[in-house]
Image (cartoon, rainbow, N blue to C red; front, side, top):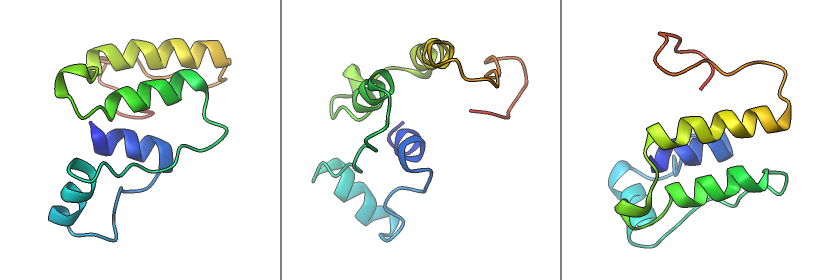
Length: 93
């Protein structure tokens, strides 16, 4: 979940300057997170921060994330439709 949301924010692999163990330590024990781009919609920023919660039980599941992203997508009037989960389409998200 953490890497997915960092990728969503930065469009890059998180902490690529560190090896896997160092990256885990930086995120888990030191609480490192990338800066949120200033133009990130508030709803998306909130969702990402929820995904970064140190408490596993407070992080949303992908079953919760997908509809929230769909609603955000619809509210922003994005011209290209997101693929619907479970329809075999692996493009888009």
